[in-house]
Structures are given as C-alpha cells and as structure tokens.
Image (tube, rainbow, N blue to C red; front, side, top):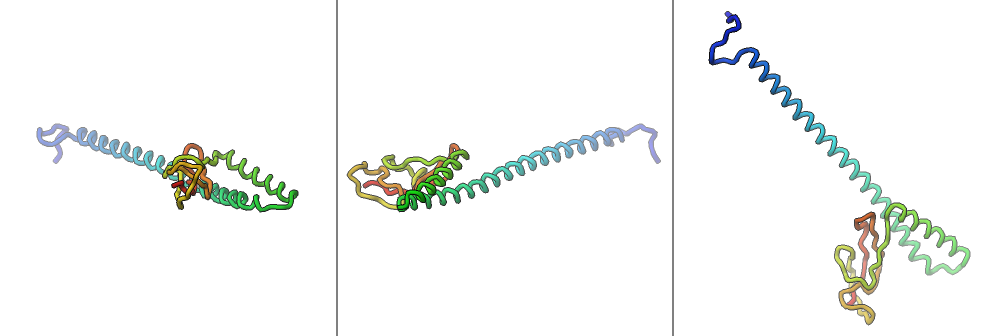
Length: 156
C-alpha cells in the first residue's frame, strides 16, 4: 500500500530521488560532452600531425633530388644543356624555399650535434679543431625546426 505523499524520515521522497537521478544523468552528459570534445581535439591534432609527416616525406624526397642536381652540375660540359639543368635546379630550390625549406651553412661553424651528423674527421689547416671542415651533405631547416641534419667531417 502506498502512502499519500507523506514520507517517513528514513527514505527519500520520490521527488528527491528523481532530482538525484536527474543530477546523475546531467553529470554523465557533461562527462560525455567533455570526452567527445577531448576526442575531437585529439583527432584534429592527429590529422594535422599526419599531414605534416606526409608533407615532410615529400619534401625530403625533393631535397634528395636537389642533392642529385648538386652532384651532377659540376660534371656538365655542354653549355646549353648545363644552363637548362641549372634552371631546373634553381626552380626546385625556389619551390622548396617557398614552402619554408632553407639550407644552412655548416663549414667553419662549431660542430653542433643537433644540426650536424659527424661521419668522420679531417685534418685541416684552415679550420679550428671541433669546427666543420667539410660538408658531405647539406642540412636543411623547415620553418623554425630542423628538417635534415648536415653530414659533415669535423676538423681535428
């Protein structure tokens, strides 16, 4: 049998129980909303990171192509052909620069393991010990960060 709305002091009223249930449901809703917002931000961050990684891979491939041009240019003998190849080289370098990719100079600079990858040492009368005496592969920056370290030989 049911009481006519009167409660005993030990059990909560139906209204109090419903208010508590509504509050619990509201808290679960807010948690779900926060979880979804965190998920959305994480997906956006992952998507942006994947795009940058993809672009980085393409840029590194283009830099390898630019390195091939750098190795080939000194060996060209035909003036007409060499000018065409030099124009393509300049165009590729400009394309990379327009995307924030710039080479940096290493020769004569103090060896920095954050910028340089030492592949050996060299005796040098022109450079102080601990400085870069020879650059085997050029290093590049992308925006403010390092894209590819320079491979160098360090003066002894």
